[in-house]
Amino acid sequence: MLTSCKTVSVQPDTGNIDPVEGLVFLTFVMRSDSLAGKELTLVSKTIVNQKLKSAPPDSDSPNRLLITQLSSSEKKLSSVAIDHPLFKRVEYANDQGQFQSKDVKLKDAEFFVRVTLFRDTEYILAEEELSGKITWSAKLKLRD
Image (cartoon, rainbow, N blue to C red; front, top):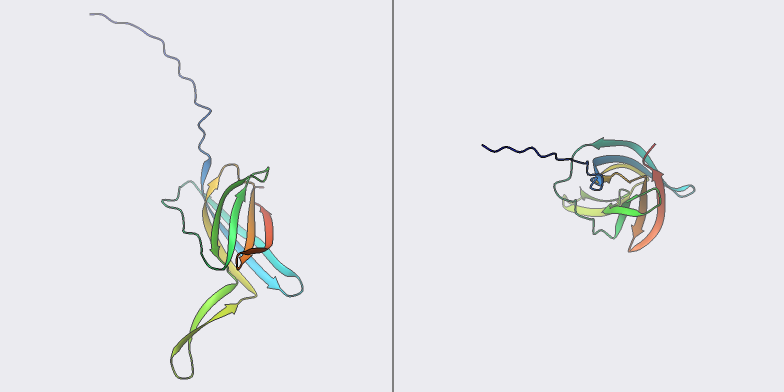
């Protein structure tokens, strides 16, 4: 019988760190006031160690919010478009008992966004897009 000994050195792989930290659930409140303008507040964030099975579809509404993750150097890491939380389409029964719908603009709304969280994310940028034009934006600090 022949046997041999061989020394194998294993070095940790430091170059392949996954850029994805997990999922983040962000809850916001958006307010619109004719005097003060628009205000966006991050109410809560929950980070879980999971990954999305598939990316959520982007909103194709003419009135929407673009939610973008930015690094500390403000490099764009990812972006998702959601229906604008202050613009709602409601259905109701008219005087004849027939259903009708109309667009309603709310003064405030709470909404949440679920996105893949990148390790380098420092800020969340919310941009209001109305009829294809960015009309307002707010940058919020995500990390403490």
